[in-house]
Amino acid sequence: MDPSPPVLLAPSILSADFARLGEEVAAIDAAGADWIHVDVMDNHFVPNLTIGPMVVKALRPWSAKPFDVHLMVAPADALVEAFAEAGADILSVHPEAGPHLHRTLARIRALGKKAGVVLNPATPLAAVEPVLDMVDLVLVMSVNPGFGGQAFIPSALDRIAALRRMIDRSGRAIALEVDGGIGPDTAADVIAAGATVLVAGTAAFRGGRDCYAANLAALRG
Image (tube, rainbow, N blue to C red):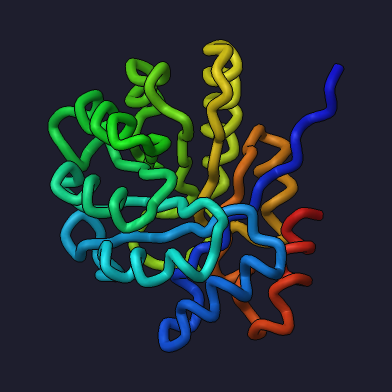
C-alpha cells in the first residue's frame, strides 16, 4: 500500500501583518507553506470585513504557491469571476451563500479554477453530497466563521471522520481541509480524523517571521 500523502499547510493571511502583507506572503511561503489561504469576509454573511479581489491581485506576484480563497460572502456568484481573474487557484463557497450551489461550482470550474464547498459547524454534511462529483475540496469549519483566534470545536472531529468516509466512497481525489483553532495541540487529532489540508492563522504567524518555519514544522508534528 502506498504511504499516505503528507498533509498540506495553508497558512491564513488573516493573521499576518496587514501593513506588510506582500512581504508576509513571501515569508510564509519561504517558511514552508504549501498553499496561501485567503479569508474573504463581507460583514454580511459573516461579522467581519477583510479583503477583496484587488488585494489578491496585488499579492499574486509575492508567491507562486496556490492561492486558496475562502469566500465568506453572500451572494458569492457576483465575486467568483473577479477573484478568479485576480489570481485565485481554489475558490470555496458556502451552500448558504447562494441559491444554486451546483451553478456556482460549475461557474468556478468553467473559469479553470478548483472548486470547494465549505461546511460551517451547523451545516449538515449532506449539503455537499449531491455535488461531490463537482468539488476538488471540502472545507470543514471547526469554529464559526468570521474571526481568527477562536477555540477548536471538538465535535468537528466526528464531522471530519464522516466526510473522510464520504470522500473515500466517492473514489475521487478530494482534499479535506479544516479551518479553525488549528495548532500543535489540535493538528494531530484533525489529521488522524482524515484531514489532508490544515488552515492555521494564529499558530502559523505568531512570533514574527523568524518563527514561521518553526511554527509550520510544529503543525506538521
